[in-house]
Every structure is written in structure tokens, then in C-alpha cells.
Image 1 (cartoon, rainbow, N blue to C red):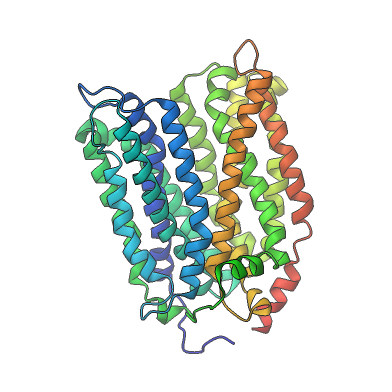
Image 2: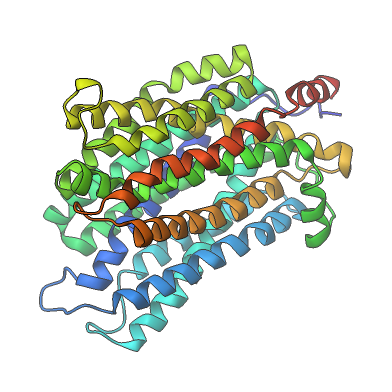
Length: 441
């Protein structure tokens, strides 16, 4: 039963909660955008490359592996934590500043030349970075179903989180280059870390114990993971969400090739296509918010899966005058339309995980929200790796040049096949069962 003493989260609390997403999205996007460039080309005057590209790739893969493994461990730790600040805030409080500090230190390697010492340093720092990233993000996401107990409030929280996430990504992509020109490379890193730090700590103004029931769980790690995957509603949702991101990651990886090889543009033009998709997504956030409350989460999620499944095969025709349109115009239209399902996928999945985690009380009698987000994070990170393998295989087998573009062209249709699986499986999502249990609480 719900604790009648727990307050309902006000609008200011929802906004502050969403701001945290802007913090880690900003910092992580700067790292993804610039760390490889920094170590491979070294933009500092008089400094050669700090390590070979292959070594960087291996170290990044190992870092991502640690990131995936950390999800269920930190999730269980947070679910079972006992403390006066609650189950989530202590992790966010102590990991946030360390996360920003490690982000800065990543751009200060010990040797200003190609050296094995730089490789060792990068491996240690990335392991710490991804662990601290998960140490903040997993408990942060677990707060969503605890702070908001109705579908309406959960959709609102997910919407604010999505808005700040896109703003953080946009600030990183646009602002980082401008700051490098004015402050230099290290000046940019410090400025972005400072901005991210402020956003990361805004959610801590919301007192967890005032707005969330924080009764610690007691399950061990293995038992907690097994019980999570016994929740059939969660498994059905997870398959649908993972297939979407698998397809979208393939498209994201290949966007520079779509632009430069199929459409004959430049690397700079890539940002225009990204901007179209993310800009349309941001514009449609209010509509997704309203429809999710009126029609239910399943209907909106199904629309996103089906829409993306229909759009993906059209990527095969990029660079051709489809429907008599100029190829560039067709590319703009296709990316803009892709922003519609993207708007859904930025909002609805968080609300669905929050809903299905309520069913955990029937399975174990405990509240273990963090483990659901942790299990999802683990699977999604594996899907990210798989999308890279699929892309590399297609390009290797069928070509990735203007003379042999078939590998690039096939990425859309192949991605659609994965999402078809998600459509079939997610169509069985038991929304009525989930809603019925929420009404019983």
C-alpha cells in the first residue's frame, strides 16, 4: 500500500528532476564527440597523436563492457541501500562530482606523445568514468517511478527528462566547438564540466524521502536479476525497445556515410540531418505527452515501432530522385519524419519501465526500480555493440563507397527486420494487466 504521508511531486520538482538528464547527456556527448579526436589527432599545439586508433577502439570497447556490467551491480546496491537520504540520492550525491572530475582528467594524459602510458591511463580513467556514469544514472532513473506514482505524472517526468537530454546533447554538439575557439580545448572541457555539474545536482533539491517511498529491498544480486526477468510485461517491453534502439543505432552510425557517400555532401552537412531529426522530436514532445495520457503508453509505443519500421527501408533510396524529389530534399524529409518516432522513444519507455516495475511487488513483495533500469541498460549496451558489428559486416561484405554503396543502402532494410520482431513481440504487451495492478495499489 502507498504511504499517505508521501507528498505529490510539484511542477518545480519535475523540472529539477529533468535537469539531471541534461547534465550527464551534455558531458557524455562531449566525451563521445571529442575524446577520440583528442587522443588520435591531438589538437594541442606541438603535440603528436597520443595513441594509435586501434588501441583507442579496444580501450573504449573495454570501457563499454565495464559500463554494461556495472548496471545490475549498482542497481542492486541502490535498491538495497539503507540511509537517511534515501536509496537513490546518496549515489547521485557522491558520484556526480567524481564523474565530472574524471571527465576532466580524461583530457589530461600523462605524456604528450604516443606512449603505452597514455593507453594505460585512458583504460583506468574510462573504467572509472563509465562506473561513475552508471553510479549516477541508474539511481537517477530509478527515482522516476518512485517520485511519480501515476501514469500521468510519470509521463510528465519522462518528458522533462527528454527535453533536458536533447538540450544537453544540443549544447554539447553546438557549444563545444564554439568554446574551443574562444577558450581553447581544455577551457571547453572545464566549462562543459561546470555546466554539467550544476545540472547533475539540481535534482538533489528534491528531498527523496518527502516524495518517494524508500523501503530497501533485500534480494541478492543473482536472485534480483532472475526475478526481474520473470516479469513478462518487462521482457515484452524490453524486446520492443531494444529492437528500436538497435535499428536507430545502425542509422546513427551510418549517417555520415548516407550524407557523404549516398548524398554527396560533406561531413559538416551531417549535423543538419541530425538537427532535423532531433529538432522534430523536440517539437513533438508535447503531443507525445498528451497522447500517452489519453490513449495509453502501448498505443503510442506501437506507433513509434511501426513508423520507424516503415521509414527504415526508405533509407535504401537515399541519393536517388524518389517520387521526383531532389535527393537532398528527400533526405531532409526522411530525417524529419524519423524525428516523429524518435520523440516517442525519448519519453514513453521510461514511463513503461516505471509501470512494469510496479508488478515487482507481486513477484517478490519488494520495490526494486533500479534493477529494472539496470537490466535495461545492460541489454541496451549489448545492442549498441551488436549494431556496430552488423554495420561493419554489411559494409565489409557489400561495400561502403560511391562505386559500391550496397552495404550502406542495406542498413535501413536490415534494421527494419529487427524492428519487425519488436513490433510482433510488443503487440503482446499486457497494458490492461499493468494498469489493473496500478489501480489496485
